[in-house]
Image (tube, rainbow, N blue to C red; front, side, top):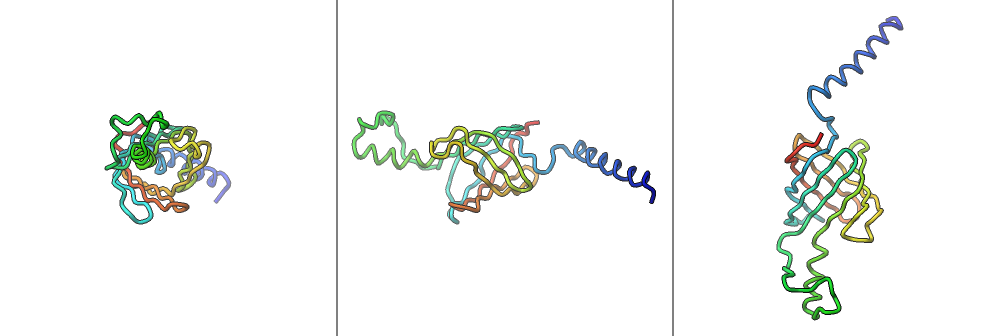
Length: 161
């Protein structure tokens, strides 16, 4: 095969790749969209949780709250010095059972890496987190393999282009 034919084949392959993307939409690892949490398992145990995640071209925001948390109605939790010991116990049981964070992210192969700029846990701000990605159409699985083992299942309810 001549050098000209090799070049023609290479150009055809590049054009075919762009054509496939335009026909089928977003690339396979494109997570942009609005996602609703379907389920989460931590250390092998189901954790009933409500959650939403929005991913744009460069940023993300995630909010997750465990179901069945104690209510804090009438408890002045922003002024801890005014709390009774029972109220302190309720606050200590409730607030850690929610997680919200936002920041930037990137995808490398099948790894979703995100840097938390704002986080409900101040110790987590500025840190990088990594999840293994399994994407199948509108269903996303994020797997945390280090630290607390977690398996999150999400469903895309809206695309963002």
